[in-house]
Amino acid sequence: MKCRLMNKHTQVALVEYNEDVQAITNIYEITNIEYAPLSFYNAYYDAAISNVKAMNQWFQGRGIPSWRKKLNHLLERLNVSSPGDLLNKHYALSLSDQYWIVEECSCIQWEDINFFTHYFDAAGFLQASLDDSNNSYSVQNNSLKTPNNTTDGMLQKGWIIENDKRVLVKGTYTRFEQEPFNEWLASQICKRLGFDYCNYIVDWYTVKQDKVIVSKCENFINENEEIIGAYDVFQSTKKENTINDYKHYVQILENHGILDARKKITEMFVVDYLTMNVDRHLKNYGIIRNVETLKWERVTPIFDTGQSMCCDEYTQNMDFTHGYGKFFTNTSKDYNAILKSLDWDIIRAIPIQDLKGLSEEYYTLLKSFQTKMEYKNKEWSEERLKKLKDGLSTRIDLFEKESNEI
Image 1 (cartoon, rainbow, N blue to C red):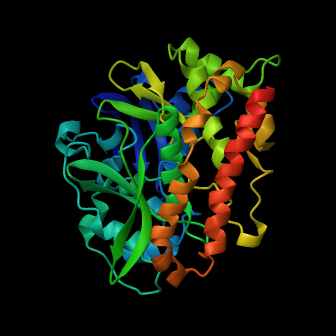
Image 2 (cartoon, one colour):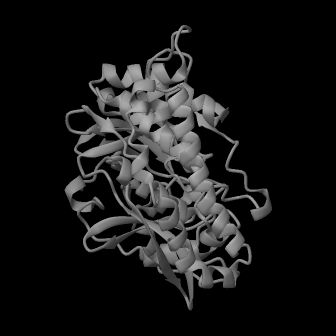
């Protein structure tokens, strides 16, 4: 099937998409390389990399990964054999960018189909995603007419429409189901400290006759924007041997006109320090680019901080004094070392005293959900809740101590 790969209104390339192998098998023409995904743009100018391979890596990377929690249940309920079967459904549209594919002869326009302005029914997909039972059933075919076919990540998740807003609903991954509360906590830290952030709330979502704990957040881009992950940004310029990853990344952003990059990136890692986030990989932050002008508009707000606060540890093993997080290409770096790699003047200016009372507020939220959570998960004990409360206080105290010594 000969298709046009589009970036909103602009044709990027003419390609062959083979539905049997669920892959792009040929690129007939590159029409506008400047409007291509940055990962493909980077590869296009590297003679050692196959254009077809690079295009497929990007395209398949937009889909649901093989490590998605309860993936087999989801695929069975959607009546598809693999995540690859979903890649080109409903033009491969997303709510994270404006790319789509359409048959070469089609007259369909982006305005006719995009999910930023058009309704979609995501109930079936989300039910199939969040239902942890072993029940076998199939959802309606229109459940594939959603942006949920292009949702990366390990968490069970799905986009819905609430009050005319595009809202991402995320479940849990770890055995103690703590992630939504950690997302809320990171939001509250950012709110009090004046950081730019994606706001998360904790809620129940009804699945069949049961309720599951979820986080919800509104989409933070509009129909003229795309999210570009930090990995592709990092790879867009060769790193000098004389600078570290942090300076390399910040320099790239500053050279593209994002002049507050140093401050924004420092603030993000401060939140990771305070919450002991272990999952700040290079897809969990990045930049927002205007797809019409190609201008790099801003750093993404702080998002995806669920894998924090010792959420995968048994209560007796929770340690809030020592730990390791991800820092660019270093996947296991001591939190204090991360802090010392950042901008000291920015760190010293952070009003850490504004977090006073947050530990108690965090505990109150946890306590309000305890009865229902403990019914399903015995690890949700009073001991754990108090450890989380005291653990947050410990992290705040340690940050204050470290920042005074920097």
